[in-house]
Length: 459
Image (cartoon, rainbow, N blue to C red; front, top):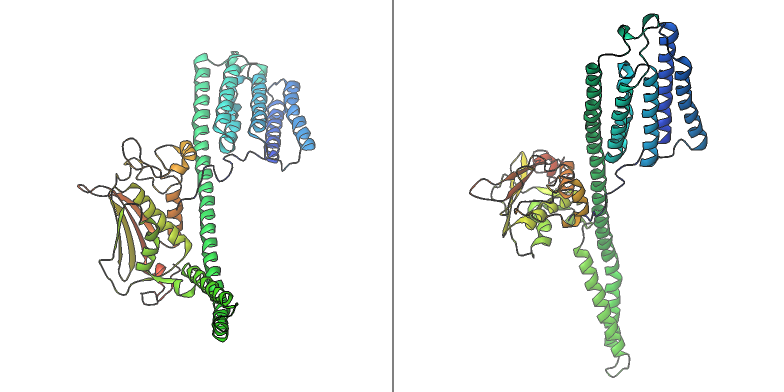
């Protein structure tokens, strides 16, 4: 039931648009120019104004060259973006060298390129840029021109702040680079994972809907072709009766009748697939569960479907691909991990309906049970999951449940679209195994018109 995902749905890192970096750099150039002008001419602090403006002008020249030589919509590779962000770190280091080093309050801007990299580039690039920023901060902490102060002197009448204080500034800056970089990368990575997993969900749902549409076309074709084939069969029988027994055409007419009957048998088989045939669009929950369970009955695992409590008439459910796939994935996982038995229990009341799937296997890993249903949750780790997606469902060396990467997320997402709430539990001792409960408000699932909502649900 889980699609083959031996490679990610899309690229993990799409890179930065060149236009984005150019716009951010123009913003930085404007801010740097304004700061230099205000400090030197408005506040009256003496700066090496020529050198400072030359460093800023170099960034302006680079931006113009990039804009003229490349289309703004171009996406940079990881390496290209890394070089441009590395330049920004070095340019900031040059300005800080000219204006007091770590004594300059603007030293915290070393964080900006690392933060940009953490949200859009690979972890390796972010680490390298973080190391470069920390190294440049250390260098301008050791070697720098004095921070300009009143009457052209240095801050506090000394060339430098106390070394211990400068060391503390560098430590704070390095920790901030590491902490904010990791935090930004983790948030961006979770967003990327969720987007990728949702894309996989849409892919699965589109596939299931396509298969259902094919089933409907098959049933319609069988219905439309049945009449002409019936006519051919009748004509063949009439011709056979009208021919003398020793006619050389008797064998041909008999063969024609046999082939017409064979075509009718094939069409009857197509009709049995009929998700698009009207009588099968609406099915009782017992039939839906049998439809879900049927593909998994021949794997040596006993599957028992029971409906012990009858709270009114049996719900009638729309047979839609998302619901069938979601329930099927849960049943498939239970069969994969069960030692010998899977129990499926359906209960309903006037207000809700619940389907519970339990197995007698090893159960969910305790450290993952609170995270089941999130994309790529597996004790093997995300990147290993990508390499081993085809092996989803096998047990680890301790016999515990693994392989809960994308399939459960897709099933949970599709079932929640139908109005369901899912819960994942391990069975209470002395029993062992996993239990998955899927609960719908009856008005969201029952289309029979006999429930409280009178068929307002969407299945």
